[in-house]
Length: 214
Image 1 (cartoon, rainbow, N blue to C red):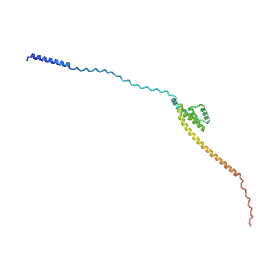
Image 2: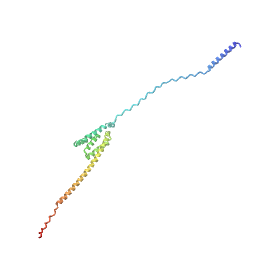
Image 3: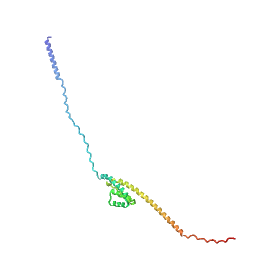
Image 4: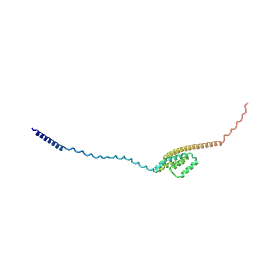
């Protein structure tokens, strides 16, 4: 075969291969474009929750104010109890009259009960117990701090009254026994008087003297 013919065929074959490669390259699928990355949205952190404000403290009402003043009222009552113990009888009577004329209040009622209890009489003890009972059932706000003290004092007065009644019964028994002794003495003295008034026995006549025997 002549060289020109071989070279021409070689060129034709090379050109065909080039065309075939170009056609394959054209028909090859293109790689899919990568999806565009979604824009990143920065989310700011939520601010820390603030603590709820504490509710405002309510102003103390009359009952709370009285409870706050209860220790002071109790201190006054205890101090008065110490003072009234040393009062003589005349000043104690004046104190009872002064407190009785000034009207009722829980503190004044306890003070009057203390003064009455110092007189050591049954009538005043009963009156003091009535005052303390009134303080214990008082529905107002003032006596709330005084009611425990009133209950304790009422118990002390009840014990004192029982002791006074026992002492009175014993004294009455002694008076009754003394009266019976006096009555017996009077009867005995009456019997002695009757005995003294009775005539005594008459003296007998002397016997005649016998002459001596010889």
